[in-house]
Amino acid sequence: MKKSLVIGGTSSGVGKTIITLALLHLLKNKNLQSFKVGPDFIDPLYHKAITGMPSYNLDSFLLSENTILSSFYSKNFDIAIIEGVMGLFDGLGPDFYGSTAHIAKIIGSPIILVIDGEKLSYSAAAILHGFKNLDKSLNISGVIFNKIGGEGHLRMLKDSAKMAGVEFIGAIPKKDYFKISERHLGLVNPEEKTFNTTMLDEMSEFLDIDKLYELSAINHPTKINISKNTGKNFSKIKIGVALDRAFFFYYQDNLDFFKERNVNLVFFSPLKDELPDVDGLYIGGGYPELYADKLEKNEKIRSQIKKSRIPIYAECGGMLYLLRRLDSREMCSIFNAEANMTNKLQSIGYTVAETVEDTLIAPKNYLIKGHEFHYSQISINENFAYRLIRGKGIKDGKDGLFRDNVIANYMHLHALSDPFLFEHFLSRCHDGA
Image (cartoon, rainbow, N blue to C red; front, side, top):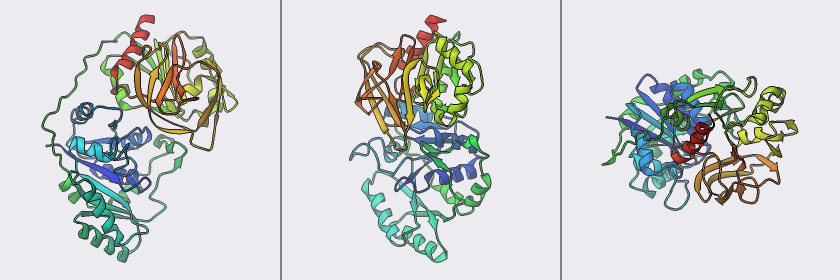
């Protein structure tokens, strides 16, 4: 029987990610699968760095309940660890829609709550009591405290867990050593440096893995429909995927979507490669602003992309690469616009867009769900492909720069949210092949 645990938090910043990684490290010799709640590209890369296996996103705004169940239960695992997002109940309304709690309820998984215990003692009991009783249909079965002090502090927190009727799983001491470096879009990409598994070994000593494993279980839904690939076969299509330190924000489901349709994915680096011989390009988000000088120096591929007539789909950082300039560095100049990075977050959240033009991924008057997260601003007078019903976009609630063979947007898309979008893209690539 499959087992699973959702690692939720009382808020953002309590240590969900580092504790999730420690648990994955402890369980990596088992048949293990990791997941991440919500729209996140970096945390799943950390999961993969520990387990050696792709991690998948579960998002109840972007994905239907049946799609979430199908994605989850179709994976081959004995135990799954699902890292939550923000605070356990932080969603899009008082019904907790889109939250970690919502995902836990859909898949029927127990929850381990992470609490920052640095400035708490017996008040932790009240916090646990509140979280446990706000929605009694949830199974908050255990707690892990982070940033604790000495033995006296530990004793009070253990007592608090007992008072609230929640199993004590462990307590991580407060050490600067137990953290991961961050930057403006989140954690530093784990591929940028050697991952410190010694830190995880040390953290593991403070966790009761046997008790954790005992608590893991799934209250299986009565009916699960595992979706099967019924899409077209695109075996003759080659899609170039930009993948390096500048561009790496891709949902694993998006890459799997192409592979399941027998698309030949050709990975390349805009930092150092030439344009591969492909029928279309997929350029995801990432940190092009950190490597703008290197992207500018690879003039050959920028010229090749600009002159190419193959279909191109680009998201966020990929869109910035297609502009004339990024922070005064020359980019591909497909669109006559300049982007500049800011110190202030410009937009974060889910998006709903309506197409106002026929595009590479959808016809006119089509609704698209996605999410946006960026620190850049774009100076542009171009026409836009999308009118945003929800979200900020590029300018005045509009997003989507487009040409006949190109569509580029701040909005990130999940292929399983609406398979039609990427199939429409592949069909255009096929028509030009």
